[in-house]
Image (tube, rainbow, N blue to C red; front, side):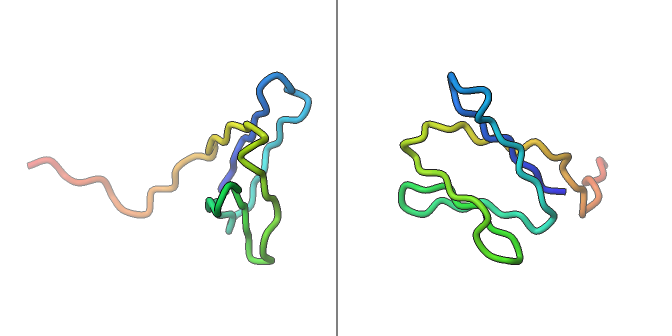
Length: 68
């Protein structure tokens, strides 16, 4: 499941974990925009100073290349 941890420096009580299978993150203008199959679910302005970190486990869809 795709998951992002959003941290607000100096305001730990405002930290958010957002997760959803079809979750995507795009940057539009000065906004970080999270969307899922229903549309926009969260938008954070750059002025908020939030740190966004992807924290889910990577999904291996392709096998690792074989060494010869």
